[in-house]
Image 1 (cartoon, rainbow, N blue to C red):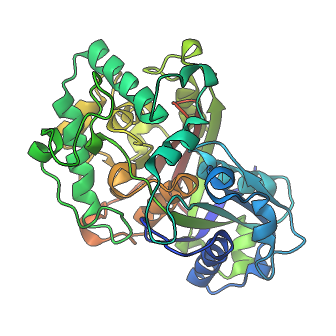
Image 2 (cartoon, helix red, strand yellow):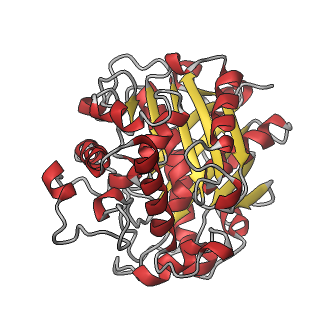
Length: 400
């Protein structure tokens, strides 16, 4: 296979895009990524765009056509992908596959989500409803906010299986908010969270579903945002004028999907996620021991624990302990979610998988804020999920 490199990464601040419409968002994502390396969109051979809620929240389809409206991208192989919250990761894989097929030497993967209105306000009930479309129809009845409810059940199952208290998950949220305060792109970078605040049921912090342990601070944010990666083969780097030593190699990737209904999968030992991660490790020729940077899909704090286990950085049931021992901190054994994660950086669904890879690329090239920068970044891994732990997209990155 051809080696694939990240030539450029660009993202918006996560939070509110206000009155930006979808065509403007896509244009800004492409212009931003191209601007990072002073290239023109016409230099890009292929493209993919990922978004999850664009039909339901923005009443817009055929995103590939909007991407083709960017001057220089018309009449090129472009597709739109949807894989729930793994749509961004899927867009990256789509571009990689096009490059592997020989459709070109350069390409761009764009991910975005516009979840708020022009004033930055959100319709919580509507968002809860449309996100629920990514669950099995038989598992929605009686759930007002389908995904928080489903992951509250997963959190309860994790606690019961391994004897983990709520406080351990709250501590993960505190760690991630601490990272986000240093990330200028993070939605919650002006919020300081203490363990007492994360545990106390008062103000905005409440149990999301009565009788289940998930609290507000255990949840990711409803977010607007976009992110874009320019990918290239070795020949593509030369065409773009990007020196190989300034690039990051996507050395391995994996994708797997488990059945959507919970009855047909083990949510505490997700087979598809494990397979995708192991596929990425094997393709890269690396092991979990080689990884000291990671971004994982913590849509809820229980997924930070499970994601750490999918990385094979912790045994089943030991994911929270990895965080509590400080091993996930920027100068820990493996710096996980130094961006702030979905909990505090924000979760613009279609952009999330792109942003995970992009932030890891920044870590490997020393471009994140100094207090978050890993001192000797060797290799990075990402784990992006879609649905209630159903679709999984994983990658392994290393300096070129």
